[in-house]
Amino acid sequence: MSGDPTRIAVNGAAGRMGQTVIETATDRENVEVVVGIDVADAETVDGVPVADPDDAVDAFAEYEPDALIDFTVPDATLGIVDACVEHGVAVVVGTTGFNEDQLSYLRRTSEFVPVLKATNFSRGIQVLLRTVSEAVGALDGYDLELMETHHNQKIDAPSGTAKTILETVQEERDVDPVYGREGHAPREDDEIGVLVRRAGDIRGEHELVLAGNDEVFSLSHRAEDRGVFAAGALDAAAWVAGRNPDWYTFGAVIDES
Ligand code: NAD
Image (cartoon, rainbow, N blue to C red; front, side, top):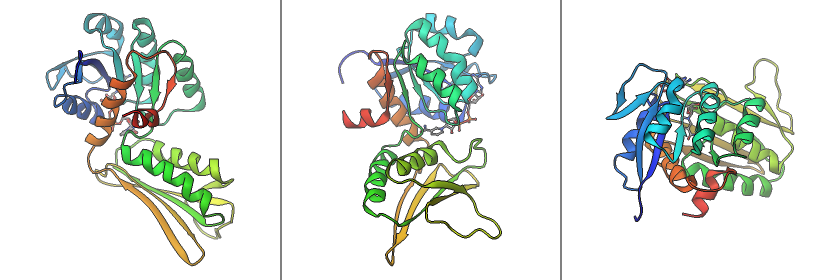
């Protein structure tokens, strides 16, 4: 790898994903985490200094990151992007659970700095999304059911990844989501059941079942370690830093690497 490493700031540095990003970066030569941001009372994570979000502008001036990786909550993401614009820092968003207004704000941010957002930074899920399009398009009329399972601390439901799978299905077929079923609830042809489980420390499991024509076809993915998301986010940060302001996807990173 040639050239200087991409200098990275991590928003949510003390969280599950933030800590994993910092740990994963230590094994890499093309990236260097120079500063963390978090509301948690942590002065350092793995030797990386951590600043309060109120001090983000000063921290960016001092540590000069090229890109920010964000794994927090939507309000915290929106709370830091103005500082990124002020300092020309590319934004890599892994946080999930944004509403439409919040997404619009992020889209506007991409007019000033590059913004790359992915609900899932694993390479396997990106391939699964492409396979979903092909399978749903080819298996017309098959019943569709989507399931996801995550750890018991996850806030948003269904997961951002499940929503992305749902959107991918809906690009191919006009189906309405039915979130769980209870009581007298027979299945309709134009629906997709969406089922959510929360238990233990499960990193993330997603499955799309297509059933019809006396056969059952299932597409599933299981993340075995948070490192897979951290690795993808670091790849994305190294890829997007220094690009023109625009809205980028993780699929583009995979296509070009
Ligand atoms: P977490 O609760 O462990 O960590 C979140 C961190 O954000 C905490 O340390 C918290 O103190 C910090 N935080 C809260 N408010 C803040 C603020 N205003 N400024 C700065 N920091 C603030 O959560 P997690 O498991 O690390 O997940 C974080 C997000 O990432 C969730 O939305 C989750 O769904 C998402 N996620 C995405 C992917 C992906 O591949 N895109 C993978 C895993 C998790």
